Length: 527
Image (cartoon, rainbow, N blue to C red):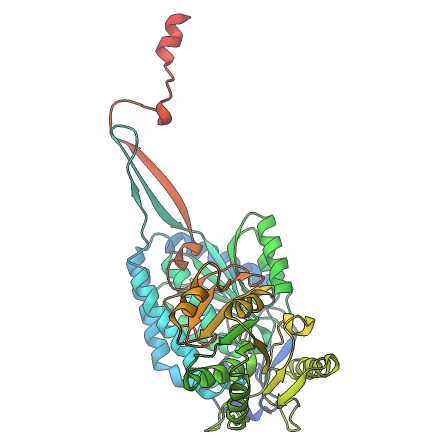
């Protein structure tokens, strides 16, 4: 399809980032149905990508419409028929080439992530590194899609299980990790033999468009169109259609618990598969034996990284009463060193929140905290400058407060005292979310208790590292209202495949399982 320039030339930041030879003015249409096949569609709805550091537009795009959606799904289903038959190691080879292309564009793509989401440059580049890491893992996984061989109870029979692709996989991502979470899903799903349709957050669609262009170049060169597709819109109409679409075998959704619950119910209603990565309300426990030289930097990064807009952000800090004063004092001094500003500027450790609504929610939480009697230890206000900046904040609070029980998506850290480790574990677990958790201790018994069945109820439990910054290799996800999904490492590949049990009778008799006798000849003789 012909391209059309939908970028407003009056937006001065549109020229600030390039992707190799790819200028931002090329990142324009609303849907992609295959390599370099961008569909202009008939939509008259245009929307902007906003730089949260300035509040100004970066570039614009047209929304995909329902006709675009149908064409994308049709192409993805058609591509599945061919992709299924490609040997898994060959699929892995193509993912390796995507990983190589990401390496070539790591710095500029990381800069685009920072520009569009407000992450500091180090975090933006780190997110692209996550994509590269998951590509490497997926290449290896393509040769390890193992099934089991079982011994049959029947003579001259063999049993085994194998795994087959699901078909079309839908991936709906949030703004805070605009490219890495797609890669966690898409690259594993691809080596498993699926095609992937991506619906990114409208707050970070330029990042998605850039990644789609990178994939297009690789897949066009290799002759495999339609494996990765993209739909962008300013809203959730097409996302809802994707969730309800009987032709989509799996929906991977990253976002809030409230929306994720509806997604889960809808997908379950049509008997498809769902993978949910939802809210976190993560706690760090610091006992009285902890090495504070380890704990303080981990707590600061966990609470202010991505301006507190990670699902793994440290939101609650539970401190043993014997070290409470020392920890809060050291933490307050560390917060003084957190430079807030332009995420692309050297030395900045925290950028802005994503938009004006996020800033207002943060300020509303501060107001509610004060009304409840909470004490601001450090921060507690917005910053009066262009963009959506706030102060990283530490506040004394009570775990039972409804404010503390819900996820505030910003750099607001609640601190609380505890008497015994058992008390701290009970406080940590006494929220509806169950994503990430951490204990800082030099007591072996404390560490083992925390990691035992009587310890953390979260999907991630760490000792002497923080809640944020999970690495590729381990399965990522959480329990309770976090949704129960697992992505990235370990055996997460199974989510994107269907299991089939096979029994082969290579003998000349037909024995039945459980020793059942079903003798037709005896029945005929008796008749």
